[in-house]
Amino acid sequence: MYYIDPHIHMVSRTTDDYETLAKMGCVAVSEPAFWAGYDRGSVAGFRDYFEQLTRFESQRAADYGILHTTWLCINAKEAENVTLSREVLAMLPEFLDRPGVLGIGEIGLNKNTRNEAIVFLEHLDLAMQTDEQLLIHTPHLEDKYQGTRMILQMLSDDRRIHRDRVLVDHVEEHTVRPVLEQGFWAGITLYPVSKCTPQRAVDIIELYGPERLLVNSAGDWGPSKPTAVPDFILEMRRRGHAEQAIRRVVYENPLEFFSQSRGFDFTPPVN
Amino acid sequence: MSSAANSQQLIAREYLPLRAKILEIGAALDRLERVGGDVSQHDGWRQLQQALEILQRCPADRAEQLLMHFSRPYQDRWRAEWGL
Image: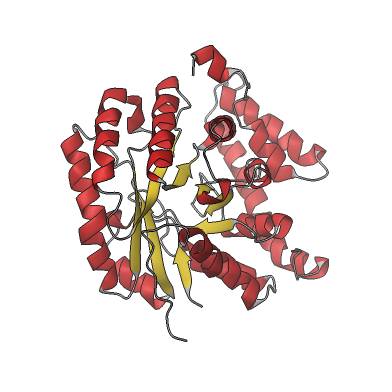
């Protein structure tokens, strides 16, 4: 089955991973800008990172028949530095019209601080001025519920936002309902220990249905599994779900969401 | 979109994985006890004890209730309080 991984940090992965993903049916990925594991020291570090995301990475993926798309921003963890964040925000428009750029992301909150909220709101404003889609990171562990509610509050307070152009990511059982009820797309991250297992992800699909739900691996430089979406597909099959229902979640839903972006240019594989 | 599996199929599939997970919890609690010392005042320990009670007490939505138990609370006046 062809599938799309809508959230994976391929700059942290090897070329062997691209080969494995291609062999497992992956035809496209989207890569949100992310924390590198250390705080970058200057806006120049972000410029180099955005160059890598928008030029080099797309070629590396194309060598394996995978479309690489990306989202750009300063992530929530580094957003604590408001001065640097504003420098990055001022630079972002230079990159937003490049091929494969789907929008602004993954913005969000990390420890739910005032500075993080300030930078989140300024990203929202830029996205509205430039007509970009949004991909939003919700915090980890004990901060997730509070942070998700704060994010939904900020999104709801901005009347310019089209909710069907916003993906709120890393939902779990205690946050998926308000995200869907308020009309946003929701992403389930299949991540060992700190997020969701394939089994729990299928539980959520069974409880809420497939509409506006995506699943992703969020594979990155830490403990993570880039082939987690095929694990989800296998769990769906083991429970007896129809191939069409599985395809809706892992292929058609990301296509529908990404197709709203002017930077998305995807040619479906020939069956 | 309900599960296509019935209850007998599910329990047959889930029995061994659940048994293993419960054993892991038991073994981890034993490990803590063996090293001695008092963890009763540790926040994490108290949270874990309460989580085990939630598992027994809640008739449904256990995963959601457990996640809420491990979550910081939300208060909706945060924007006004921070001047945002």
